[in-house]
Image (cartoon, rainbow, N blue to C red; front, side, top):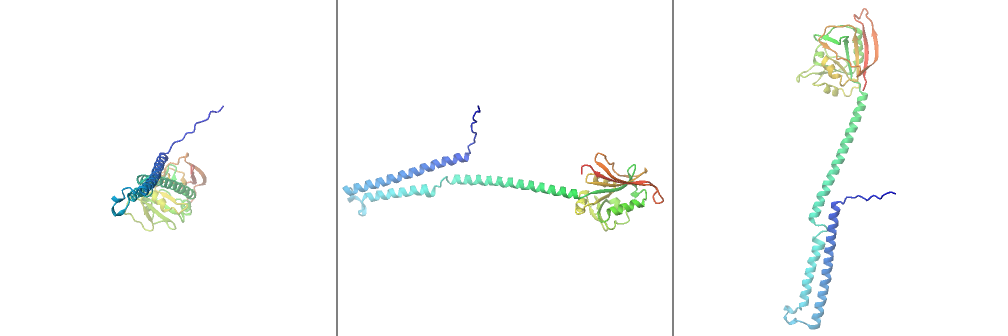
Length: 300
């Protein structure tokens, strides 16, 4: 057999207050009803006595009979009672109305705040979803040529000259934003043509011809937000920061070791996977063998 569960309920204090005031209101109306009946009875009784005995008629001023004065007094008292119950004294009282208004305003404010939080949450989720979609469309790419020991350059200069690598770099970056540190920019004769040059430097008053200057890699990427594939082109510190933002790496691996003062960061095989490679041998134009390698971030 199943045992019946006792209903559990919590009485709202507002409902208790409402019932108590309603009971008081009923008592007030009953009191007025009794007052009305008593006044009518007294007036009728006084009128009967006055008509039957003409009692104390000679003592009343202006010839008025005492029953009329009594009726007037009772009428005034009844009117005052009526005004107090039905006009000046509202159902729950001014204090209760003020309390309820404050309660309702507070309750409404809480609802508005909850609605605002929900809207902010939805807006945040929507913005996050849009940002994720945009991020998936965008391919932030680091492009570099590095030796087997990750050497990039020395004394702010390239260590080798590989013509096909320069063509490869030009073809990939043409029409895109190229983001670089100040030293990398100053190592070039001028800003790279047919590209939007963005320089990252801590120097607040730094200016450069045909280039835009920002003071963080985040600001540089924000500047390139309309570009579906902005390129980070160096140097070593910018590459290290770029690993956190990049979706792919276009690396020319030069198959030799070199003495250098600037290095490309290690590529972690747990984070990056190789998706394409093209090997080139030594020839009359290329002193060193090299490979074009493309990496993609595994969790991208």
